[in-house]
Every structure is written in structure tokens, then in C-alpha cells.
Length: 198
Image (cartoon, rainbow, N blue to C red; front, side, top):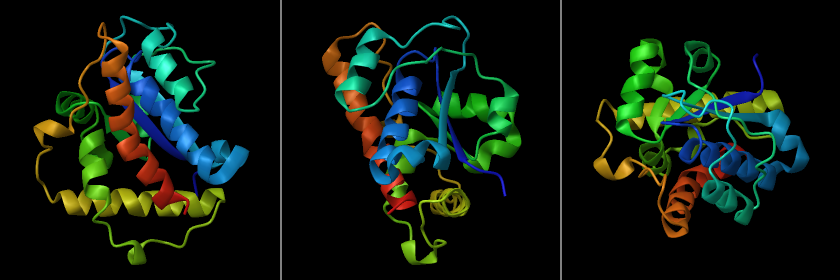
């Protein structure tokens, strides 16, 4: 069984929203499982455009990650490629447009690709009793993660994401906007980590 469970976060330039989501999900998992969290879940990101390839996180995005207890070291922006999608068990996009971009690249990824706010909105309706039992070890987290993705996909039932599910692009805007985006990201990443590793 492949492990760890891999989550790919996608936004436009891979310097604001997706790196924040990448590092805040990793932090939420570490909060549940401690240092072993990094072996249980791999959180990575990429952008639909390659303009910022190799760059660090945008400074206000990095400030939000650090303020929320996440790490910003070792980050370098990269352009989305098909093999990144193939390697991911769950794909979060910042917007519905980016969902369309991912699915155009890899149509078979549609069932495991979600606008981040859409996933967070549907997550609460999952029947937890139907999930595989939880344990802080890779195979259990993998099996539970796959089951959560399948359950949210069933709840979506072919409906399109809502306009409010998109994360606004905070690039070039002030810290207040980045703070709001950080909160919206955590509205999905924290409940997901909590369900994944109770």
C-alpha cells in the first residue's frame, strides 16, 4: 500500500495560497501526531503558471504560516506537472478555474480533486462510522484518507463548487487579506487533519 497519503495544493503562481495550504496542512497533521506526522502525510504544492519557479513563499504568506505555527523553510515554487497530479491522493485547488485546469491535464483525477472551500464545506457531512479505523501509522492514515476523499466525492454528487468556495488571490494585497485567506485555509485543513488522525 502506498504511503504516505499525499495532498497536492494548487493555485496560480505557487507563492501565496498553495504554499500556505501546504504548510498549514502539514502543521495541522503534526499537531495531531507530533513529529511522526511528516511520515503519515505528504503535503506539497504547485502553480498552474511557472512565473515564480524556484522562488520563496510571498513574504505576507510566509508570515501567516509562521504566525500559525507552520514552517516556511525549504519551500521553492514550482509549476504543476501531470506527474504531480498522478502522485497525489487528494488535490486541493484554490479556485474552480484551477480545478478545471487540473482535470484538463488529468481527467482521471476529477474524483480526487476539490476546490478547497468545497471540500471543507462537505467534510462535516461525512458519516464517520463508515470510515476505516484511525491510527497514527502510515497504512491506517492512507486507508482513512482515501475513504474520506471518496466520501466527500459522493457528497458532492456531481454538483459544481459554489462561488464562495474559492480562495481569493491575496497577491499584492495587505496582511489583513492574507490573514483571512489563512483562516479560510484552516477552516478546511484543521477539520481534515482532525478527521484523518483523531
